[in-house]
Length: 218
Image (cartoon, rainbow, N blue to C red; front, side, top):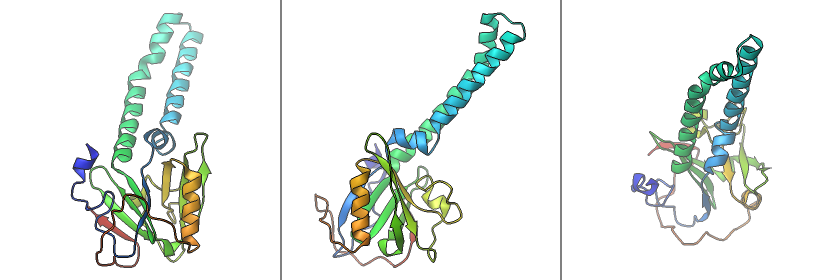
């Protein structure tokens, strides 16, 4: 189980106890289905192979084959399609299982990675703005726009990254529930508002982390 893989964490999703005065506002994880569809494009891959099978069938049938031989020829790529979809889905499941988003009163923390977990500490003081993309079920993506003077490595935040931002990567909370409310909380924190801590209280006193954006190998 996931919690057994990260027993070294003093607080779920965090590499160390929070310093005194810092509190957890929200904590969650990406939804597996949303991650598979929108980050690993499983649906697009399935549509591509469905179209390929159809085109192979039409080409074979128009070329003079009977229906059944044409059908057998068309589905010749089906094992490859199932393998591709299965591998992408498995990777998405692995990331959904091992990723944790934590929003504290002072920073955003991302723990992610299957073979080698990495923790990203992003102080809220380095975030310029927050955006929101809502989906029909109320979930959504919340990208965090980082100041031009700051930078994170794309390989550290991927696949939790806004698409097409490789030049200046923007960390993104992917497919999180009640995204509209969460985006409002992030905006409130950026505006300097004080928000209540998330129950149960899991904070404990510890030395303050170094300022800046840190990627720590777990």
